[in-house]
Structures are given as structure tokens and as C-alpha cells.
Length: 113
Length: 114
Image 1 (cartoon, rainbow over the protein chains, first blue to last red):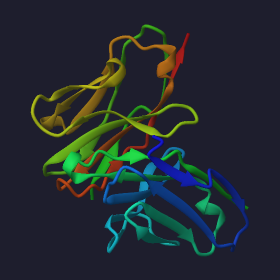
Image 2 (image 1 turned 120 degrees about the vertical axis):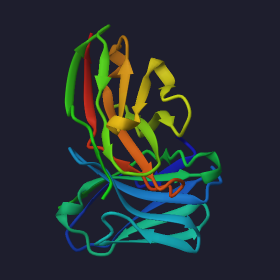
Image 3 (image 1 turned 90 degrees about the vertical axis):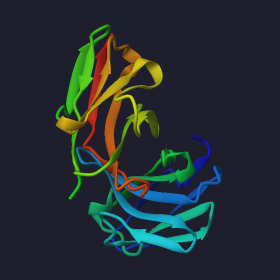
């Protein structure tokens, strides 16, 4: 969905480096989410934000941090990347007034060497 | 803890075959249920969803799913698959309504042979 964009789309980095993944949306949704997808494990929630001042840890937040700079922007940071953070990362948005259906971005493929 | 289980990890079908993908969840309260599809190289898209009402819901591209509360199941079906249905399918559950937090199953890879 072009309304949710993620940058970069692909990134290769080295162990110990700091990495930021960015997500922007034009849907006007208050709620935003970060997931990681690993083969055989589906998607797992890292962090979620219900508005600019409301940020919550998800299922697997260790090693990650987030920043909600504005309603439209939600960034995910890996302070010191490690190889087991190699995964496909998805951002999503939702609107509780529309049943909380989540709309996903195209994903960022991150490889940590 | 809530969990979602998709029993079929990899399904291979020929075109025109019927499809049923299983999804079971563990959660005692009210749930909202979703099926998402991820075509090769693309992001997740919503196939269909169930919030309340008729337990048989219809989605896009001829897919449907049936919510059976007593079995904690939400199986996805399609009477006749096409090669273009080749994708990965994810079942997801939102418990404690309106939290927005989805629990995803492991995913099922569907390969349709022409």
C-alpha cells in the first residue's frame, strides 16, 4: 500500500552498528506498529504506538528502540545490531474507528553480518 | 498467553483444486480475526476479517473463512485456486478488542502448480 512507506528497502550492515529504519504514512492513522518477520515464525510485534505520546513494547522489544516523531512517522532503531536481528521488518498503521485493520508497508530487508 | 497456530506450513495444489488452510487460536475472550496474504516480493494485504455477525465471511479474490467459536478456529477456504494464488497466508488474532495488537500465526506457504 503506497500510503505506508518504509526506508530503506534493503540494508546490509555489520555487527555493532547502529541502524534506523523509517516508516511514514499518509493514511492519517494514529496507531503505528513495527513487526519483524522470520521464516517459520510469522510476524512478531516489536513496538507499537497509539499516538505520539503513547509508545508500548511488543512481544520482542529487546535490542530495539523506537521514536514517534509525528503522527505520520515512526522509526525503529537497532542500537547495536547483531546477526540474529537479520529479518524482514514491516511497519503498519491502523485506525480504531475503522476496526483496527492494519495496513502494511513494503518492508525493509535487513542483513546483519 | 495468546497464540495462533496454522497447521499447514507448506501446501502444494494444482490449479482448480480446492483449498482449506487451518487456523486455531488460544484466547478465552472476544476476538477479531484476520487473514492476510503476502504475494512474492510484496507486502501483506488483508484478505478478509471477522469482527462479529455472520461467522462465514467473504473476502477478496474468492476467498472465504468460517469462524467456529467452539473450536477456536478460523479456517480459510477457496473452492478453486489459481496459479496467481501462490503466496504466503497468515492468520492473525486481535484479542481484548480494540487494542490493535495482532498475534500472527506462523504462516502457510501455498504453491499452486499451473
